[in-house]
Image (tube, rainbow, N blue to C red; front, side, top):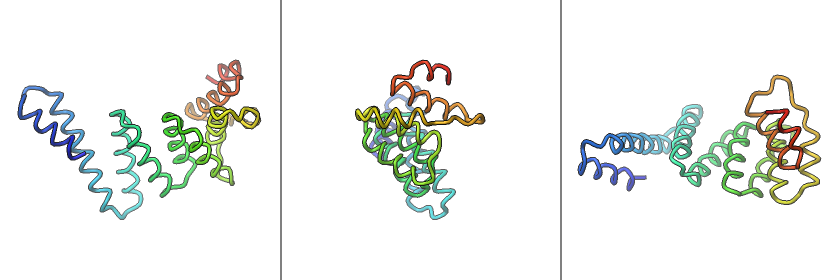
Length: 171
């Protein structure tokens, strides 16, 4: 990241009127500062806040492999269904379907949620395990108070196993 910071600083020196260089420099500098702060942070809630911010930077910049590294760190520290969903979403986006299935299967031991089960169905379907994927997708009961993210996960599971009509109903 230091190299990117240096490159933007050089770009600004060569063209001080280019606001895009200045904005990117500021973003990269903030990310660099966050990464440095993360290495020293001992307060768990603050560490998590910094890690999520740094992860968001990498996602926004399209540097998904780096975001995946932070998703793994976050999930390792937090171990929640939410962190599992975030990690599995990135693993699926990077076509790491087996890794996503492994992440989500670990949540099946009492911590599973509608979203983790739905994404597990997606990961299994992508690996060709259609019977198991279909069994999971069809067994999901969507709570009435489910948010749009959960509904989207369940719709994805239904599409993955060929239940397109059910997916449309959810969306």
